[in-house]
Image (cartoon, rainbow over the protein chains, first blue to last red):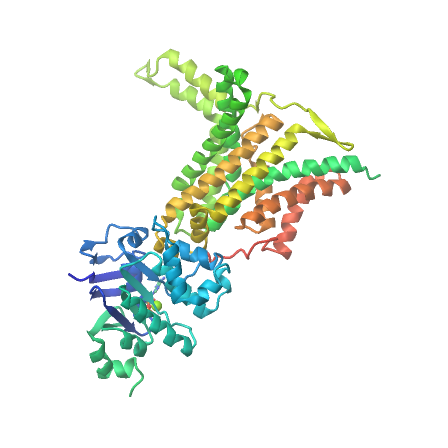
Length: 235
Length: 340
Ligand SMILES: Nc1ncnc2c1ncn2[C@@H]1O[C@H](COP(=O)(O)OP(=O)(O)O)[C@@H](O)[C@H]1O
Ligand SMILES: [Mg+2]
């Protein structure tokens, strides 16, 4: 049984049919990449999985349980956590408070988790008292990632973590993604940066105007002619 | 006109007292604006409901002899009842009149708020008359309710509301003390102390408690707050609960210290407190406190130079000036839609 099974979901914005039957699955321990051009429906897919949007049709199963009846705020208790597009840090809360909000779903002591996050991102420790709005883009990405990890998720959804970051920082982000995965967190990674995404992932899906047009191992996708032309900039 | 320092000092203390009311009520406007980006124009009526429910409870305790035996207990219970009643009113309004309109155009909840405001004013005013009509209902010529009930029910409703002004029992006297040459009544000191302690408590709650942090997270981004596991609707309810309880506290204080209450009593303080919230920076909690005291003081300073009846002109002139020259208020950010 896969950790996450998305089966033929259709999501709408009013009359706009944004997802036209998306199916995908993520096995425990994997990094799976979802790539596609701007507007393909990647964010919509993640927001539907996380419960912020409701599919009009289709089902989402996590650890075998159908998520249809749960509001978004219950999912973190089940083990799903998300780094939203554009990072979504609470800009008027301090770095530390943002991390505490990440652990809102937990009743136990979070001190060791804070230390773990500060171990991964030492910059956050230096700035723990600072309000998040004053952080640089790269630091905000670290914060959003660290915050999502504070709930100790079994599945981490990441929406374009490399967006808007200097190339030198992008490498670091993907290193961190692998590190987090090696420590036992399964990751569904949405990226426009297909090159990097397919390097860290074991499998991938290609999304085009709300539909999965291709799915394969990351290695095969990197060699695929269509992927090379459309997403890797190789002619 | 000669400058009379003693009188001016007395006016300043007066300004602080009035400012306490503005600040307490302004907090409700600002907290609700923080989580919903909407102005709850029924907030003045929540203040009024607090005063009415407080008085009704106090009357019951007077009847039961509790007030005579233990006035302090009765006074504290009156405050608690007024706060609880106002809180219940606020939470109910949010649930019934605002939540269904959460995704509607921005004007819709505003109109709903104005409707609720009129509804509550009229509800309090016509409650006894309404009771009389209901109790007089007949089926096939026979009264539904036994005649004995009628009197009891109408009596209770008349004790609660009605057309006339209602009066709190005079609990606090004009006793006081001299600070230099300035006479300060104990009741003003009590108002200041209760208000300030409450506001410090609120500040601590917002800054340090789990709920306070969740409120701040919700006010920044509801979707991301939900991803954290925060039940956004519950936090919004709790925000109405706290903001309304503060208005209820102000309502009971109004009754206890100024004695007379009426169904329209929420209107002017409501608008003044809204002014205070904008003055401090709408959505900003310390701003609401600062704005309340600034407005209270500005009024009393203004009437040093102008006839006293210009007090409201000072307050609303200030509102217009802020909206023109510094719409963000003293501590706030711009009035924007981005937080929705
Ligand atoms: N809030 C919205 N309202 C209406 N349409 C939207 C909204 N968000 C996204 N869309 C539309 O849904 C489609 C998928 O968008 P999105 O999931 O954001 O794509 P991606 O993340 O792959 O760039 C696009 O056509 C986009 O215009
Ligand atoms: Mg996107």
